[in-house]
Image (tube, rainbow, N blue to C red; front, side, top):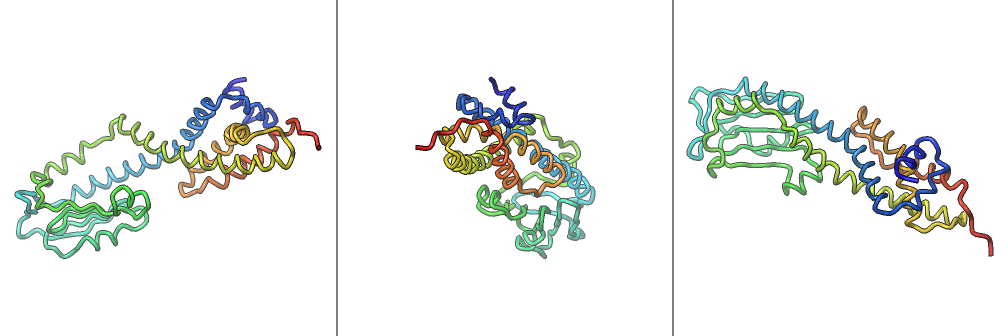
Length: 268
């Protein structure tokens, strides 16, 4: 018996999955990582798609940028330059050298999956859609870079347009994004499997099967194979789909079939 055999059983022969209780726990963890990678693929694809949209939209915005330069901590344009707001599918861009808009206005632009970006009179700002992840990483969902700090000194319309025209995502960046996505996916799947194992262990006790909690956890990991594959496929078509319920309840159902031939303890 090996992982490949159990993988095939998890797709075609549920009744043999009880043999997973004999698998070394290290191999089970590696299998859970494999399942996490399956779940991470559509999420990573979604991130790449968003990055591609932002790149294309950024080039559209760059084509409309008037001449400007950030020099000595100041945002410099010609006196005749007027501000404007330009919206694409992924970005609402503000160019406001006259100071008519504030950070709160840019933040209000960030609705749904739209990102608010602005060159304001005194600072460059990015407002991301509000989420627990951005709040925990940045302390808020807004990034502010005041010109007076000198961080953006030397930036002008010409080199910004050139950077957007030539920008591409290196392969190693794609790998980093995949592995960064893999970590929370693994944790979420592990939590789901522990919940499945609790339910499975309760069922095993009621049915008097000779199974410990970790035996149930090992079997549950392989019972989750088909639900994980189905969830990953659904994510390609419905990005907002919550897969936890599907994985938990379908895995429990498969677990019941997996114990079909398991030996029971005799009644005392």
